[in-house]
View: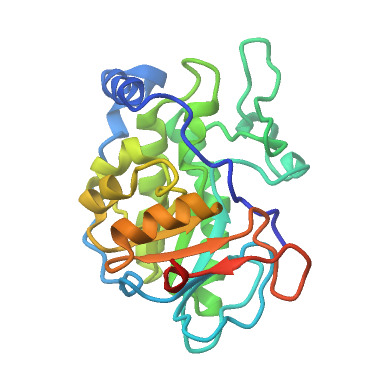
Length: 283
């Protein structure tokens, strides 16, 4: 089972700075301008139902509570029978201690040749900075997407779209992230899976061009971002909050339109110590 992705997957750069970075990337940073605007064919897939009961089970699968019709689980798990199932994959970074599963040249390295780590999670970042490397990385991630489709999942949730914001300056760009995400979107759609944008508000404006069908957002209530995600995705937004304050704000503003759930930070399975799951009915 994968480590929980909860809590820290937030863009740490100001939105204005991120938009500037996107503009700079478009004129040739990382040598990838030629493929930063791929057109993904319109997907013949179904996004999750809007304003549905949702559960976020990345810490381990368990029987969904009553009223849940949408559930997200790791790609190593099986889908919940009879529900809309979203399949989680860690697409832009290696799992903790799993950098050996990747070719050495596909790990992002700093100017001194040292592997760049996401220190919060102990994960090596993947080098999506060239078309050739993106294609090779996508080949492995596509295998996971194939497994999701073969098991009967309905959608895929590639995590760490915002990884480029944590890389040392100039090593990766927003354009690199979008180009790689578009590769995954094309493959997911070919397997009849919808595909989510995970967090990364500054790229939401490009979601149609990249080929993304809905959003899975952590803590948009906490950070006053929910409305901006709805501007990009309409009501096809799934919100996961981790604090009472964030949950209260999300429910007060958007609880009648979108899917919102509060989980504990470790997304602990039901029945274990620390498990928290709340819905807007409580707020």
